Amino acid sequence: MALPVAFFAVFFAWPVVSIVDRGLRPDGDWRFGRIGETLSRPDILDVLGFTAWQALASTGLTLLVALPGAYVFARFDFPGKGVLRAVVTVPFVLPTVLVGTAFLALVGRNGLTDELWGLRLDTSVWAILLAHVFFNYAVVVRTVGGLWSQLDPRQEEAARVLGASRLTPWRTVTLPALVPAVSAAALMVFLFTFTSFGVVQILGGDAYTTLEAEIYRQTARLLDLPTAAVLTLVQFAAVGAILGLHAWTVRRRETALRLVPPERTARRPRGAGQWALLGGVLLSVALLILLPLGVLVERSFAGPGGYGLGYYRALGSLDESGTFLVPPLEAIGNSLRYALAATAIAVVIGGLAAAALTRRAGRLVRGFDALLMLPLGVSAVTVGFGFLITLDEPPLDLRASWILVPLAQALVGVPFVVRTMLPVLRAVDERLREAAAVLGASPWRAWREVDLPLVRRALLIAAGFAFAVSLGEFGATVFIARPDSPTLPVAVARLLGRPGELNYGQAMALSTILMVVCAVSLLLLERLRTDRTSGEF
Image (tube, rainbow, N blue to C red; front, side, top):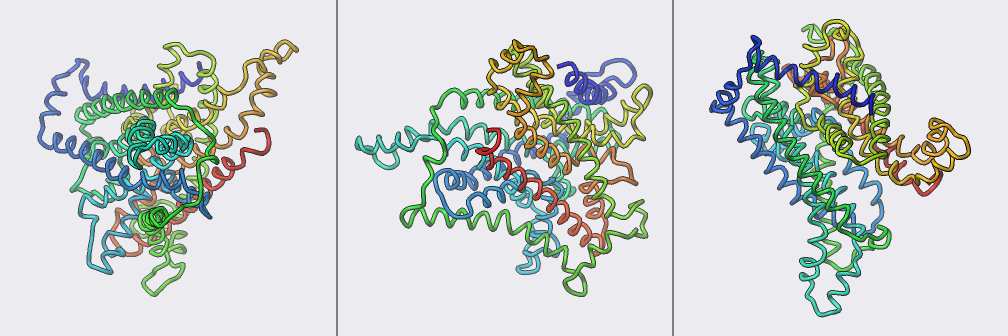
């Protein structure tokens, strides 16, 4: 645990604490009265109220749209199911900036709905809600559908044989079993939407501001650290409560059920009702997921003189405004280099942390497990700005170093590495390690020859997830990426922030490239997941 603890202490706790310290103790004396002053301001109350409201609305709408999809993927067997499962998961690994860009191309100015019906939603809250559903659809399908596919259908069949109606077995058998999974999915969606930043920045503008976006505004634009510090504490408390509820629901889900293999529960749809349900889910996936991405790609080719590669060619040249010190196309290489470095850091730190968590289950280890999840919920904007004010003097003066961006990105990747590797490491029989030790193997050799062959595929999957989330990290990177080394999400945000058809088209083209890279990474992960029956496993 030594290296992971040191990593989180230096690159997570220190920056966050420094922001709070500078905001609430500017002259050496604590000023806790600023908490009450800030939280009583009408504009801040409006931000807090809208943040909670849009998170609740997004969560409810996501459950309403995605639960039928979870049932279809869990209980039905149909051609192309594996490919479709990968498709609905693509949005989750896409950067939030790209999600906002896709919906801007669909419902924004000169978007598809604007051209066809004169309807613009980018000036309303509906664009934000729909983008959140697009982003979190896979969370519900994976979390609820994964459990649903392993519930023994014979329990419902037995209830019907005993005379129960069609609804009664669902209400008394299936629904209680699904409640922990639905609760866990709802809490995760609420967490992601409560801390939403990129989507709100692009689609909300100045009309709609969430807590994360307000922290960015107070920090980057107004340099009001006291207000930013108070909002960071509020977000930290809210995220802590959400993660506590999430841990409780996960424990219930792990201990309450007897499961069967998924292949024993899925079958082809029967009857007009089930085929209609399958068709409805496929239609919703086409409209909600495929259409925004398709419009994004179409806009990247639609130049003033017709369809072509004009916007893509323009990415290789400098503009006259001086916004970019290098051609936007160089952001692709920057993002790949940063993501590879962040992946290496996340795999080392996350792998060591997962190995430590498999050894003991004391309070210290459980507390460390909770600490690993905090970067997913604590303001990335706070972490990024904290990097600037803490890592600016010896012995850690990293402001001019390229490694600063991968370090920030690795903070987000570590939780995915831990959650991917931990179940596999816990499944390794301890007696195999003991036998290796009896035969004279050192701890390192026992790990190399016993654990590593068993967890190699999980390690590759963890690395893939870390690479995908690092590639799309925006909240912290927007602060610390140098003007001559922008990442893809930062470059897209800069292009969208400038007027002009050329800038808009380049943003669409760069977003399409980013989407393709993320999708390829996910498809490789899906292939690793579905190939588990061969090889070492």
